[in-house]
Image 1 (tube, one colour):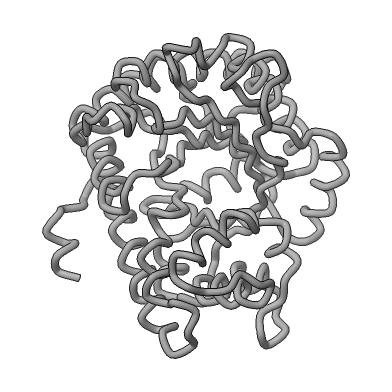
Image 2 (image 1 turned 180 degrees about the vertical axis):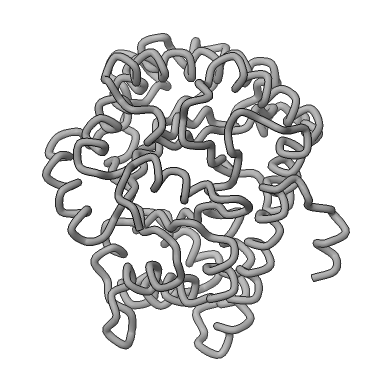
Length: 341
């Protein structure tokens, strides 16, 4: 495989393929495992992820890359094969989450800043040796209009950190996924999400240019434009698609390697339906695909339940969700295909 950043980025958004976000922190995966009654240990986390990575139908046909957590990129499968090698054998690209999480932004109640720049150059060199060819950094932008959240300072600080991270990645021969997530947790309407997302993306690309980041060797991992969960309103796929594409046409350069959406708390089918609606109104200047965690994993997690006897059923559930999102990335998904499964 070519090691040029733009070629890696292009492979990450190859037609109908998307990313499996398997980079849950130990705390997050424990919450997921609690729901299915499985104790979270290094071995149970490994067994679960190995089950996903060995799901050959899903991995070879629909998954272009896997975002890993630090623990996972170092782990070996039950038979001693490094998990990274299993991912590579499927034709997918290993990637790594490198941020240290969102912490409260001093002086700005309700705002956060993502940490993890200290020592990042050295960590990226290590991850490159372990096989990672792309990385991910998530900035978190919450919306609470009544409290003035997000502040302009929060947007600017997070955009600057994303740009510094992206420049370090490219120096290391690693494609940066830049993820400025405007959360869908609030009570805001869809137009507020649009305005905050616009301010965030505008600032992000100003900072990426200033940091001399080569846009062709980057992937954007954005939120879709949606009404907040507490607003009581559910935006239709048509409205989500129209507003999301309008936003990108106003803020996202055509030069970038591609766009891989986060699911951000949408249900499995919602994330698929919205991605499909976005691609159905193309063509667009960029490839638009998925980089889903829960929206790909909730069904297989439930089917697996921590039991070796359920591995085949869990892999089938994963293959189905990956196939649905593959179709959505091509604008060819239909709700009736969900029932067919």
